Length: 494
Image (cartoon, rainbow, N blue to C red):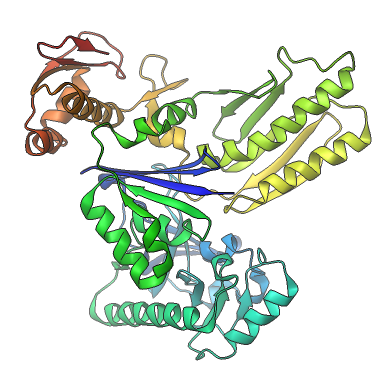
């Protein structure tokens, strides 16, 4: 399997797409005004302790207090499938915390605008090959490394490292030597010392440490030896990725490439179209069947249909073949759409118990490719299969869309920010393709208001980059997603 990474960097948004054997499997989006806080460390102050829930609320300086559950542990440990019982202490929360107490916490999940973030007091600092657990003595190896001889070798290497806290070997550490771990541990120790110094210098609530931005998180967590190419379309971002790899994994420097062609990178590699399809509820299967994916507040429901596919005269074979295709495609869609929480899959009913067992085995094997933690249940009597997938951030659908104002939230449309950024990319692409230097953009009043206000720097960026002047016009069309770009003197492009 070969992996390619594509990073599209603009002043207000970074988008990263990951493909495996040419198929899009993951998309990450981070906007400057909405940067993720997962992984950040805060000096907080306990506002309330809830003994009955073994939880507390902690003021970390955000709009809402963080929710701290006594058993919560760092996201990095769950990704590596570490036995959590070996790491976290079993102590009642009322014996640990009191209102007004200052405490170091790490954000583990963002739960949206209506809820505060989830936090943990069990700090984890992920590096390229190791996870450092300050204040712990636990030493271990990710369960995703299954070869027992390799696990024993890695544990022996860990014994040669200085004991400055708990240490976990990440999946990326498989096959690595002592020097790799020493360099990684030195970097993590230095980071931890800076955090401790900040703790002494600032008053609660305060941010002590911000997790890496999206571009470098992907470089750290996604880029592995099987990465064939890492494309970046911004010179400064390209330099940052190269410098990061020079420090942590020099052998990957050669795969980083600067994209300089005139057409937008995501359009050139077919990623823009693939991302658009990931916002639709329907997914076609190779043999004519289909999936219907519905997201709700409570859970995600996926329905499998045979469609027009028929395998000979045997209905059971037709159903089995369609279910197998679905079992291979659904894990990719979960990753691509970043779907989390409870997922219920309605496979087509099968009579043969052997077919059901084979289906679950294929499904389990495909889910194992996911970096997010998943738990798969058995098939129920009605062909339903339940699973859970770790959720730390909103789905791609919720990131790129907003509740539709015309149906009072029953559906979703692209947000004004999404439309404004798409128009920016359209103008940039047409300016480079047609050579035009004047454009008229007609869009929904909310989009025009953004482009004249908070996102006015987008238009300035077009002037600076390609010498383009853009005239804005409010459209009468009531739909927020409406936007039209016209290169003056060159016709219109919808």
